[in-house]
Length: 94
Image (cartoon, rainbow, N blue to C red):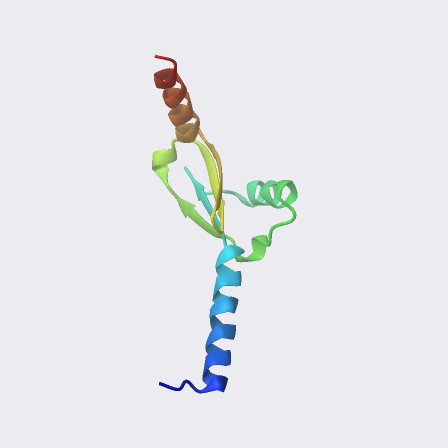
């Protein structure tokens, strides 16, 4: 089966663009709604990221703090994450 070279090139370009956008997508999970000041602090702290496309979501299960996901990387600054790490450490000691 012969594939049209232009179609193949267009599809490859489209997929690479989608992958690039997904890798740079920022998702912020917080226990409560973030105010403008808090969003500015995040922007200053992680200035290398493009915060204009950030997706802010509320997840009450994290108790307090925030979780920032950029592509496949996760920065967990939540209370639930800290408690999970502590629990894992305690079980590891036994």
